[in-house]
Length: 214
Ligand SMILES: [Ca+2]
Image (cartoon, rainbow, N blue to C red; front, top):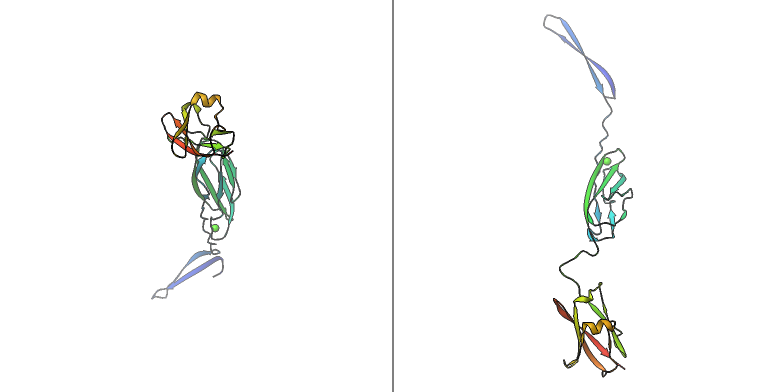
């Protein structure tokens, strides 16, 4: 039956020959075009880190029975994007719910979300990193001790210099070291392998190998 309006007449005849009829109107429409809503799939290369945190988002894994035609990202920090795979930098710490909305040509949409956790750069942690390097190494005249990670020199108690046999060659107080700009003159020592050990207040000592070569 093609689309259109049809009048169907139902005629009945009873045993006595009496005829009755009734008209029913039937409307036939075009078959519905089936369209399924898309499925949004949002992923990111990382989900947490320190600010400023650059995150690469992927939305083009989203699917539709026909085609996804629109991408809309809401990063949760007031910024949006309409690319399939945007990159976004979060500058302030916090937890952000990033929403991806995908749309098909018929206007059906779907949403997926990712939580991104951004922490501040200098957030205090229980484990403080105590690291230093010796430069130059091998040393000829003097060796410079360079503390890493914005080291608080007030927790340094001092330094020890041992030779390769484990004999304590010299001990340096913190005051001595700070005045020396964390520099140890080594030209008075014989060539060889030495160990410089930093001693800290409330922390395990750290040792580094130093070569003296003149
Ligand atoms: Ca669709």
